[in-house]
Image 1: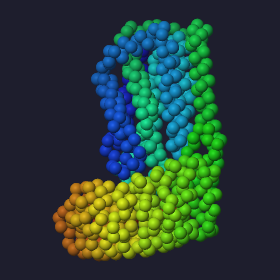
Image 2: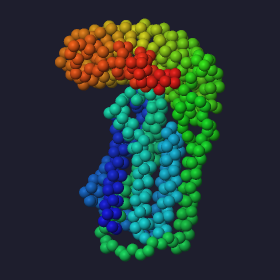
Image 3: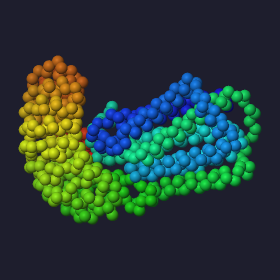
Image 4: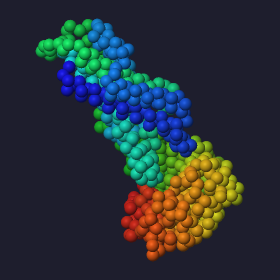
Length: 585
């Protein structure tokens, strides 16, 4: 083997092992350290124990392989096995047998991916690569040149198995995850973002022992392909180079069984490619308002994942039985967004019953004055319920009995509630996000300290003169507190000192007291957002303070993918167009 070719192959093998290990360890971290709400959202609880161990072991195994490549070492057992399997007469049936196993597992994963991916590129590329791998791989064995039927075949198989086991997900999943972690975390408030990446994450997280076994098989074969490639490269470098004669393609000299398997692989690979093209080119048409859809194989109708029902002309009452029927939207609806519809008495929950995978419901600009569930239960799958810009003056019956695992509840803007129930609503104990901005609240009830899974509470644009700091600091996972546009006159020192709290927004409050040294540090680090307060707009602005576009709009609300009426001003660039198309994004 030429020295340059050898170096290129070893570098590619090292990068493949390093990237695969990184992906597996990232997934292991997600499985192990996910918050309680994320565990429910991504359905991590289904196979946490076994999945974490499997991903962690695979990640360490990959990184150990990368270290061996970097140090110039090779596992002798893999080297010896590779020698026997690539040089003996049993190499062809063994290689094709492994190829068939790998293809079967990849097909099962491709089918599941088609039920979860709303990104058409991902849903199309994965089966295309499976078909390419199946159809092309056996043809390398027809060449007489060892460099082709051994070295190039191992390289081709190694790279494709990497892409299909982890590489594609590194490209599709890790950049958005890093953007969310180190960029703007408010992207997660977008319904479209939530739909796309929650579905993708649910696919990537093993849901059953069979699914875990399939993923572990792909990881194992990908690792072994890399080890065989490295072992073969070292072995070829260690022996004396042979004279390379002319490369010929031979098929008649191959065993009949091999020729049959060859044509079967070719036929299967081409069938997969054709099926992938047809599933995209002839995808069933979806109704207007379907913003995202999955593309399951062999689907005869639209499978809408994110549907926006906007009543046009405004406030025209639609035929919900027809519009929200499985015949129109399929049965895999994930998120429903209803805007500008005259739902004075709320939405009949019977319309949601056919959608067993429904994750979220957002109703905006509805003129809702009450909402009775008529003794109907919410679908158990619903985790997010949001009502904005209604005429509610009290907590309606439909929201007193939430779905079992509901984690998000929003009652915001236009809701004229001045008080919450005096006793704890038992169904609220699973909430991780409680949004009550734009009401007439002056205090939070004492039972808030029983919401032990609460991670974010929003009471901006209310009438609070003080925050119940002693109560809020007892919540073990509370990280975000938003209380902008209230009547607070002092900084929340106790909350700012709490270790678990990451962000406190008290922007546009009449706080004029001199901040303590600890508060100055928190404001400078943007842990406490005091923008628009007299303390920040005085003659000597504090470090960390930022200008606000309007005294009714905090910077944390501005451009957060949610339609914030208090930011809907020309000076705020119309809330950065977050109210476009009749509602939040």
